[in-house]
Length: 389
Image (cartoon, rainbow, N blue to C red; front, side):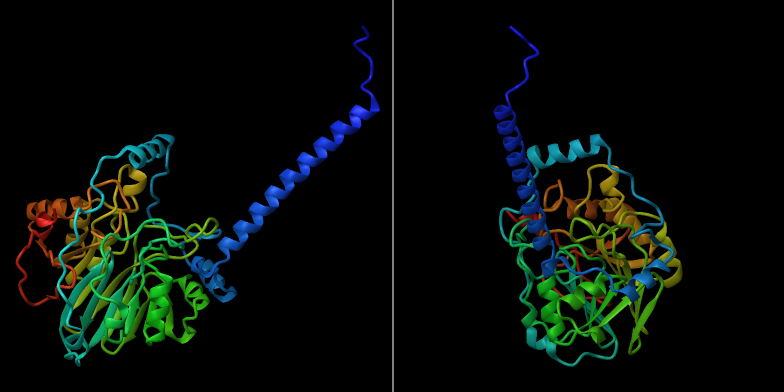
């Protein structure tokens, strides 16, 4: 038998046609994936890139490198072991990440909220997650308003297990909306659109204005700040202060917008909003510049495991430490009890917060959803989560 006998031309032709067909199929599938991805990522909930003028401004910022913002203290990089730990935790974790029953809430008197505010004073109530309603020196402020069911660009993904304390329509007209960063559980498109239609102004970190404009928020209602810049309304100063975090809403915009904490200074009262942040010395710097604060709205939930996560979502104990370093008098814990976003029991953050606060001599506030806190009045500690069964 002649092993060197050439393959007949007909067989060569069939093999070539099969190869061509497979190549066309692969190209068609790739094109379909590309078109689908482009269509999905072009939906408005993903926001928009910075305009040319915003990009020029970002490029002049000391924390903007190449095409993204960076922290003063970079977080640890993920190793294979960290990724494996997260995967195992997601698939096999046995934590009680959602409460077995609804959390207790106080009915908010919408008519009382709509009444004229006194010229001084500081009051607040927790709406849920990182969303807080605050009255300070005659102004009404909302932090990171998130009223939607899903912390996601679509109607699936992390779903809230606790409804907000009230609806946007039940709120009085809001003067200022403070946004800390553009993640879905902090910057919600539908909430922003509703508040904008009611005339609210938005104070946001640099780059987020493009998202809001795409969603129809008038440019005149948007004020973009960089760290240590401030906006003043009446007698109240709103100062963008550092945080240790990151940003991004899609697959290609990692840290493309800035993130921030907020220091709010009235003529008699002050409050601090941590936003999402890992621990670093920025808290003590803020405390030296703008403390003491009457209230700190400090993130206590959605932390760990592993250094990469803790470096951008500090532990409860570090949150109590941060509260002390910003020189705040009373700690109002937020960013817990609403979404399943981390590998811990739903009530672990508040239980650890009580222990850490007691150990550090910190006055911890534990209001129920909708329960009004007056900065100048006592609020006895209530361990209401223990009755959620």
